[in-house]
Length: 148
Image 1 (cartoon, rainbow, N blue to C red):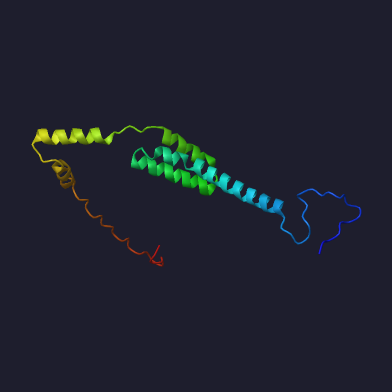
Image 2 (spheres, rainbow, N blue to C red):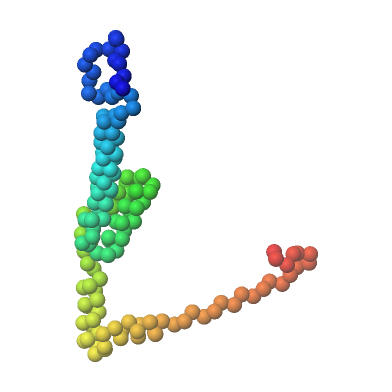
């Protein structure tokens, strides 16, 4: 059963006009395009958002953790300054200060004839224990409450 075309309509209708009861192809394509665009923009946003963390992944553990925390703060608070700070921190290479100091301490222990790490144990043992502080109670005056 064919539905007759209205007499005022042109005999040739464009392809995006669907007859009643049939699937609207243009609507299906538009929905798929919008969903694909939302997914693509979301993936690009998350890829860009994790850029400082991916850059700092090769750095020191502490630097990587600070950059990751700044990224999470930027994500949840929408304060972009945290993301910029994380990006700058990921770009800066923090010099290694502790390894040369450890090597110097180990060399000094070797010169002193001590086993490695023995000097730290002696330093901790030489620190005196703090003495307990005794607080004397004030005598209670006439009519004054006990807690004052």
